[in-house]
Image (cartoon, rainbow, N blue to C red; front, side, top):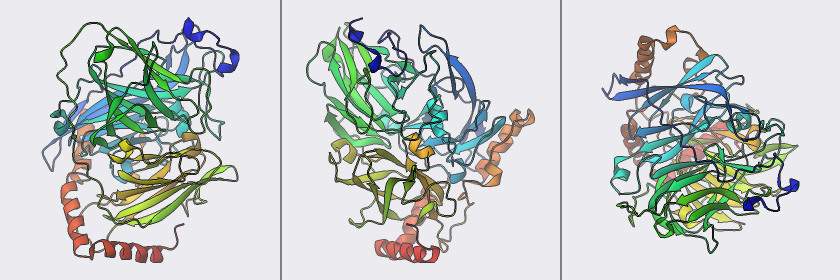
Amino acid sequence: MALLEGSSAKDWLSPEYRFFYQFPLPIPPVKQPKLSITNPVTSKQIDYYEIDIVPFKQQVYPDKGLTSLVGYDGISPGPTFLIPRGRETVVRFTNKAILPSAVHLHGSPSRAPWDGWAEDRILPGQYKDYYYPNSQSGRFLWYHDHAMDITAVNAYFGQAGAYIIQDPAEDALGLPTGYGVNDIPLVLASKQYNKDGSLFSPAGETDSLWGDVIHVNGQPWPFFKVEPRKYRLRFLNAAVSRSFILYFKRQAGGANIPFQVIASDAGLLTGPITSSTLTMSMAERWEVVFDFSNYAGQNITLMNQKDVGKDKDYGFTNQVMRFVVGNKAVVDNSVVPAKLRDVPFPPRQGNGVDRHFEFHRQNGLWKINGVGFSDVQNRILARVPRGTVEIWEFENGGGGWTHPIHVHLVDFRILSRTKAKRPVLPYEAAGLKDVVWLDSGEVVRVEAHYAPWDGVYMFHCHNLIHEDHEMMAAFNVTALADFGYNETSFADPMEARWRAVPVTPAAFSTDAIIRKVQFMASLQPYNNVDEVMARLDQYWSTHGGVKMKRVKRFNQDAINGPEQ
């Protein structure tokens, strides 16, 4: 076909793929709860789900053998969770694979034992129950593996899926709706294959694995049939190491087609931002509305710029997927309002930097301030008093590499980008994030409110090769000794009673499941969040406000010793 004219061996690390835009975009199925269980404290329903982590085979290359993968419920991406805002969930993950697993619901303010701490592993033959609040505004989360030292392998071989919180306030705006119809998840990945069609493993890699075969929802270079109307496209970069700068073009050529960016990692922006490119590093989520109404009967190709960051380009990594626009006119009542919401930006505390973290390489390992995650005695690099707002500064220590930095628990505002090729982009400034792209040589400042929970959480580079080779550390949102609020502690991510346990038939009986979920709920890990936030605000209002927050933090640092 014309697309491959001039293709040569140097264009490929993998076997040449000859089936561009010949297979449709898969839409992951919606996961259904197995049980709905009454919360004994609130009398609200908690939905209980079961996910199996299992090996499976998929025909990736039509002209080669089946590819062995490992995914949630035996598919990749895993099934999509569509969760009404405020409806709590318990998800039981059972490991039926060969390698250990851990599961992180990325973007969720989960309590520490259910956040996917890297050492909190689910061994083969074990299961773990994860309890999620889902109290945030509508947003595109994702669940993925987070097991120490093997996150890259597990995620790359298939352990990732979408988790969407649906919000009535968002539904009322009139944006395009209908999962898999006019509201489309697009999970991007970039992989490399062996000669027989098996997946090349990142296990031996220490720098990056860029991949030369671009996937969307598990399918290399798919097509998707659309009507000439507006669509909501939810992008997730689930690649191990590749970043993207995406743009849309007519197959016939011409300028990039503009679109409207409406949401980031943490949900809707203040208002739509018109752009002709979309910059996204690993683990970032961006949502756009693209209007196909002017392109009836045409093909629109989603493209990727060349020379993005440190990434290695191959012959066809500049192409992603194709939208085939129908000819038939349709009624489209969806709109994109000029105002989307009031984004809850953290209260400003001036421009002073509270913490500085350098992401760099040392003795062949990736470090944060010279510390790696295996350094158990020193890996907690920050102790942040609960309820405070801090500005953290991330510095790329050089070497030409890019690092997408993810901070667990919180949403943050990107304040500035210096020593950079680009400023804070308009759509970055219009919303909150949980991942920020730290490009080569850059210094980025972010501001976050460390609430509502105390506990020990991770932050790290989301290039999974770097993460697995030590570029991960921890921070402790410390309890307030004089807070005076009676609550169960969930601060320890390795608390024994929440760890994975061996599978037994008895544990999977309906009665046992109900007892377990109701016991978890009886401890009230989440249902008091509004009260906790009000009490934290009250606490700090009577303890000197912003100034005393800083004094308290520095006093606590002096007690605990230096962190950096």
